[in-house]
Amino acid sequence: MPPVIGYDIPMSTIFSKIIAREIPAQIVYEDDLCLAFRDIHAQAPVHILVIPKKEIPRLAAATTADEPLLGHLVLTARQIAEKEGLLESGFRIVINSGPDGGETVPHLHVHLLGGRPMAWPPG
Ligand code: AMP
Image 1 (cartoon, protein in one colour):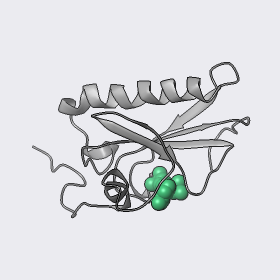
Image 2 (cartoon, helix red, strand yellow):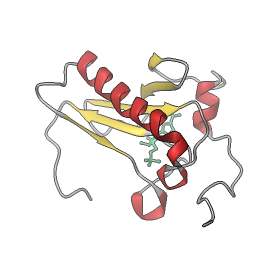
Image 3 (cartoon, protein in one colour):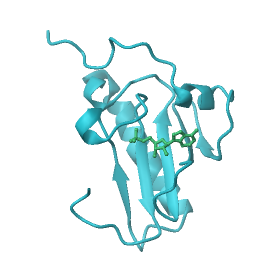
């Protein structure tokens, strides 16, 4: 078995503290599996992070057991995009994993970005 990338580091990031309400955030959605809140450094008029309550460090550390949860995160992002009025104009979801992916917080999160045209390729 290959090592599971990311489970070797201690968890409990700032996102766990947001889930526990130990630090404030602009929460827009919550259910048993996930929480969504506005990004503190918004890169678009709508920039929301959808995070699992389960502490998965990054996509590289996810396993097949997480498949329903990952689907739930993506469809939750879609539901929030609808609530934010983005379905027709469009939106982007992004998951940064690891150093080259640009990940800065080691708690898996889906970025939902919208409200302006997105460029491609990403930087
Ligand atoms: P990433 O670079 O993909 O790991 O994304 C981490 C994101 O978390 C960045 O876009 C940050 O702006 C955002 N972020 C960090 N701390 C907070 C916070 N306390 N509340 C909301 N967003 C945060």
